[in-house]
Length: 420
Image (cartoon, rainbow, N blue to C red; front, side, top):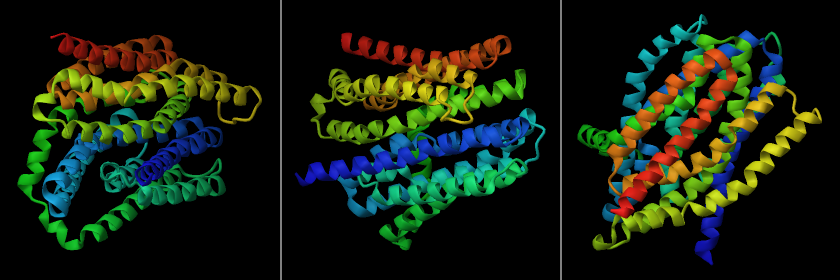
């Protein structure tokens, strides 16, 4: 009973974190869409999209491999090994932040005529996300402290947006509020963890440990970069081949879909460590590909069934709210794009488990990296073409196609492995 209550509380904390992160853009971006000038709003979302590329580099593969590393460190080496692993991962992410921010900030000028100050502010969002160390709280199965930090900081930011922002507000101020929310929660989480391990534990980090972690997660990192090609590039593509109206409509729709994905992510976060732990407890002779497939499916099917019920209801509620005039900031084009892109949520839930988690268990990281890169590059080119002819509609089709092709490729790998 105690274990069940702990799982329930941790699950609620994960839902709170993802709920806050999901509702945050839903509450602020449609409002900003109606308040800000369309060109200013387009510049804002382009800067955010560029920041996400920096974030992709900085997160590396640790959102998945970090959970596994912490679980193994706890199991084999106790508190000292756990602290060493944590600070090595943190050190690796900070190094990646430093080396990736400058070139990607320079690339910002390729896509927009705006000044670099907006992007520099959005880099605070990246730094804050790094410092939150979500993966550690997932591995420890105690996300309550992080939930408190996230909920308070997001609530204050939403309040500030509604009270401060108007049609004449500089987007630099808007960016400072949005990015500052993540920086505050990240700093708070880091302070909490430093107190937990002790400041002296920082010295456990080493260059050899950092390099070892980077080598181990290289394949997953290539996959994550490839995913970013189709998940984050559409706004940039539209900014280059279309107009600010198309960029703004697609940005609102994408925010909604990604927010729904964020609401579904606690399911992945809840079942991911359970799958990893179940695998680690198996005897060596039991760690076969067939067992991995069954284990992942056992931890995925509930997630899929739940989304098959919840997703249509959510999309229907958004459509009903729009028709009743209860959702300012949503135009007809944005609603149509939301409906079109909705299936990507279900594909994404399955991809997280069968892709990153499952293929890592069976040692198919190279397959994961090659597959995601190939599909990401192909869909990037596809999106570039269809966006030229169909604008936001083409970008939305590319978004869904990418998730669907990934799932097909992952399932084919499992069927081949199991069949063999």
